Each structure stands twice: as C-alpha cells, then as structure tokens.
Amino acid sequence: MSGENELPPEIADWLGSLGRGRLTAAVRRPGGGRREAWFVDFEREDGSVDELFLRLDRSSRADDGDPYSTTRETDVYLALQETEIPVPRIHAVHDAPEAVLSDRSEGETWFSRIRDPEEQLSVASDFIGHLAAMHRLDPEKLDIPALGRPSSAREHAVEELDAWQAIYESYDAHRDPLIEFTFDWLRRNVPAYDAPVVLVQGDTGPGNFLYGEGKVQAILDFELSHWGDPMDDIAWLSLRAVQEPFTHFPDRVRQYAELSGHPIDEARIRYYRVFAELRIVIMGHERAQVKSSKGELGNGLIYGALHHRLQVETLADVLGLELEPPELPQAPSTEREWLYDGALDQIR
Image (cartoon, rainbow, N blue to C red; front, side, top):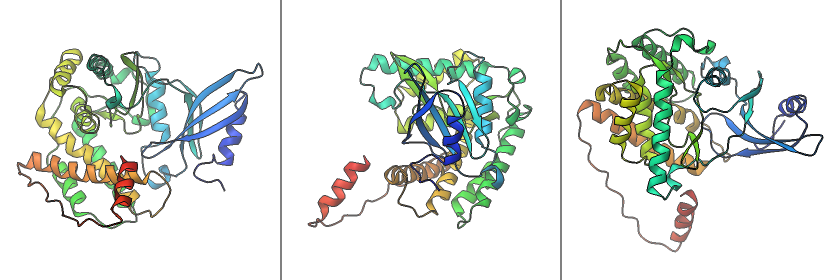
C-alpha cells in the first residue's frame, strides 16, 4: 500500500508500460482540490528526458454517484485540443484508479505575483479572450460524451443542483443548515434563461491557468465543467478574483461581452455566484469530516474560512440583507504568542 506522496504501484507499473522510456521521477505537487497533481519524468534511450504531468484520483467517486470524474474532465480536454483554446495534450488514460497523463505546460500560476501593471493587463485580457472564444464554440459540434447532449440552461442548472445534492447527501457527515437553505433558494430561483448554452469551465479564472510572456500559456482544471449559462463562468471568475485580484473587474466583464457576444446579466451572475460557493463549501464540508494531518492544512484553514464567508455574502447579496462586520476578539499577549505568529507566517 503506497503513501500519499508515493504513486500507487498499479499507476507506476502503468506509466512504465507506456513505452515513453524509463520512469525516473514522480514528484507530488501542491494544489488540487479533489485530485492529486504529479510531475513525472521519463528518460528515453537517447538520454533525453520527457517531462509530463499526471492527474490522479485515488477515490472511487463514480461508485459514490459523483459525476465529476477524471473521465469527464478528460473528455473536455480531448474536445478542446481541436480548438483554439490552449489546453494540455492528453497522452494516456488509466481507468481505476483514475489517472490522466498529459503535457506538462510551462508558465506561472499565481496572478498576484505579477508586479508590472502592463503585464497584469496583458495576461488578464488574453484570458478573457480565451474564455470568450470557448463560449463561442458550438456545443453541438463538441464531442464530449461525459456531458451528454446540450439542452436548455435551466435544465442543466437543475441537473447540476441534483448532482450536488446527491454528492452532499452521500457524505457521512452532519447536515449543514446553511447548505440546505442554499439548495432550497437555488431551486426556487433558477434563472429563466433560454438563449443557447455554452461549455462552462467551472472554477475558471486566476489560479486555474498558466501564464508567461504577457499571455496565457494553458487553461487548466475542467473537472467541474458542464453545459450551461455563460454567466455561470463569469460568476466563478468574480469569485476567483476575490482570491487573486484580476485587474479592474468591470473592464474585464465589458471586454468579455464584446468578444463573446453574450450580454451581461448581473442577476444571473449573482445567482451563479451563490451556486459556485455552494459547490466549494460542499467540497469543504466533506474534507472537514476527515481528521488527518496530511494534506495542505494551512490552505484548508484559509480557504475554508474564506468560502464560508463568501457563501454568506453571496446569499446576503441576493436576499438584500446587510451584514454587520464581525468583531474580532481581543486576546491577551502571552509568552507563547510567537508560536501563533510563526504559524500564521507559514500559512501566509
């Protein structure tokens, strides 16, 4: 039985059988909400090294009724490889446990590390151009078996609600009144949008694309993708921009509308902001029940607090409620205060 920082033996054997050379390195990378990320290297007979990327899911989500499988994401990548959208090329797929071997795309991840305002604007504008281009693709011409046939945005919104309700109810965890209230509100307020649907990436925006030389090198993470309302992705983008400020957001939204041809509807964006936060909080609800010292505990603390707050704020926004700022407790200084400060520095 392999540890969390070791490849399962069957995956190591599978990689070795692909004929790409000798597997010389497999290093787990940080990040990834539901799946592991690995850098894997193969040495060819001529001594050159093939540097690739592995996505691995050790769980059996499909057996639990979770439709957001690696197969689903892989189908999207394969369909987009034939378009202008920059995505990594898929090389091989393993069924159980689910794993996908692809190109290792070059580039930086965190948008906030760009210090030059001109470069910030260049990268952000380039990403919006790609998002608009993806939303101009004809769903009827995209071969994505895992998503099924596209229908109406309303039908797809209800399908998504049903899927996430099933995921939430499958957890062996306490029931959360805020999650259940949010489901109820979302079901009673599905937007009456009847224009053509698009391929929604889900969780789109800074942090889920790689950039370099002032432009986007690759768009990543399609595990939550589905057919739906284009405002769904704009909602996700607005939320990710809270974590990674993404230039002047109203400018990016105007640019998207001009390039995509999809008019902006703030009411629908607000609806899908609530839905996006519900998904994130449900995933955190599962992880919170598993007591383990492994994984990125610091990130978990940060993002758990952030997204619970954002869930409340998105609900307050659509309900017309005004939130009172929280009062922080005044803790007395002690000789152990340096331990807290050191832990906080490490988390940051």
